[in-house]
Length: 549
Image (cartoon, rainbow, N blue to C red; front, top):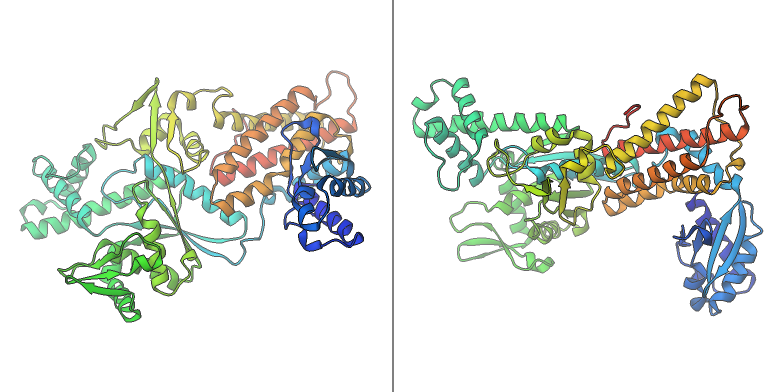
């Protein structure tokens, strides 16, 4: 009996109790509120449904809790139901009912933790989308790890997810990039507001090697070659590095295509026709304050050129035309203003602003020897994906970037991630899986197979591990609902901890001449289930589940 099943049972019992006493059934909350108490002495689970229902039903909370506890204690799978405080109910499950979770995990295998509540949702998930003007920095690397994990979590709960990268290959930043490449090729310092770092010189040399006569062309022709070839080299490098980081995209969308295809002009014309734009001081403005923005936004400048938001508007319109009913944007810490303006753009086209969700990620810092790592030699001014991966590897990099909420800044301790101790979270979780894999090999060598008498799993450490396994589906569902894949990582750490404590207290395999018992086999089944859930969770984060360490 997992928490969801128990919650359904509690609510059904509450409904029956209210009906029998002619009390208002509509007073019941939609969710029974079943949780694991912090103190295991209080039971396996606890519910506050009596406290949340009593006032609306017109009864005393403790009296209602007493009625519910009496009825719950008679139901199959419930060993006891006790009243606590003003109306809490502490529940203990029968060992066989609780142990059935092990069977559920083994039956579902790699599918354990999946669901279908998002079935039918067509999600466009745009993340990373770094400008093609330099190597991927730590901010983009964080979004690569988090975005890919979020895509996996959403897919696990039934959504159809398209991962999309938006190349900002139009605008002033590309002009500055081209100017920096030309200067480097000519042996001159970077122009004001240009880009520095060894990579600029590297790419400039590659452009000259690929187009030997480029520096003899007219300025306009030369710049066009450096734009086309240099930006192409950056595209290739970004794609390669993301692939090495285990991040694959379904769509690589180029901003320039919106301008070349006329999509920007078409979108602007559509907004004018709807009356969502107005002219002032020679410019065209989006009435974004009508939809919650703090100010109206210039879409077409007074000189007739589109502002940056014009491309964003056309891009959103393009996504909706492709059939996406939810467009998630994952943007950097300096993009807070985009939340309101993108929702305003959706509303201006007559859409529900809820089709747009914007997640803002905070900054990442590397720390080594207790001091910040401040720059990359190649990039010149920032720390890159290569710097992090080179220091700790892909697994540790991905896990460390995913395990914290993106709402908060993140300091990554390189010394900690390189250590092989329980203080290193990714090592702690992966070691649990490797330890379980070793146990499975030893069991196979002894010819011991998992058993199904889960009612024998009555030790407190067994119960704690089983209950933790039973929470996995709810954790993944909540992570998808709240767009918070870090919940999966934190859960895995709890699961690894529950397993390590179980292993230290409960011998799984017989020793010496000890006969193999049904308890050994049941514990082996529990270990197989724990290994399965660890592997499933690590897969959602794009992190390997090693067999040996």
